[in-house]
Length: 335
Image (tube, rainbow, N blue to C red; front, top):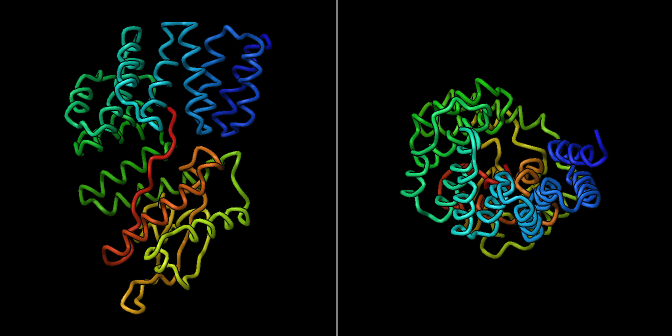
């Protein structure tokens, strides 16, 4: 294997391990060795996207496409960035349509169509998304991840039987997929099958716990400083609910609270809810570091995500009885 190919392969391997800094060094070295390589620019674009730098990501994706106008992977990667976080849905759909002119095989075509589905869903056009999903090939697919993505798409449209079938198929082929177990739990819970839903959520929690932390993950002390800063940024009356609360930072919800109905991927859980001066107050606030860091593309997004999770949980707890930890945001997911 030559030096260029070695850096390229190492870059993708480091991405899979969550080492974005190392992947960036390998990608930059690949571009340095061959600035005319579309594969090198695609890799560097993927790294920048995972790091939360959409402008740099799109620049390299576009360079890759300019060097190879049939480079479907780079087109689809760019379309994902245009959907989130750029929110240029029309450009994303146009780019997917261009990719579909070159796509070959059911897996590549399905991957493109599911990104187009996401673009329509993000812009609020469920009818258009439903029409796109209806054109997806039936498979079987080489990649079990496509079964998961089809299942998730059906869940988002509320087509629960189809979602359940695809997610179970995905888990059968890839039993270590935390994502598939998580969404199966959501489907089963929506269908009222709470006991098997809890089993799926507990399995998701177990698999999440076995995943490596992001390379930029903070120490507990550093993370606690960010938590304090986020609480200070809360506006009244939201901050009032945490006045005097015991703030506990841990990796993820315990198995016992997941069994009691708490989302295994919740970022924040408020507990021991009481009342003071006619206002609801929390006796304890649990902040789950692993779950919150998973939702961030990098350390720069941490404060924003902490604030979002705190606001969401406080509002949910204030609006209804009991503990109503809401599912977290999808977070960054360059596929």
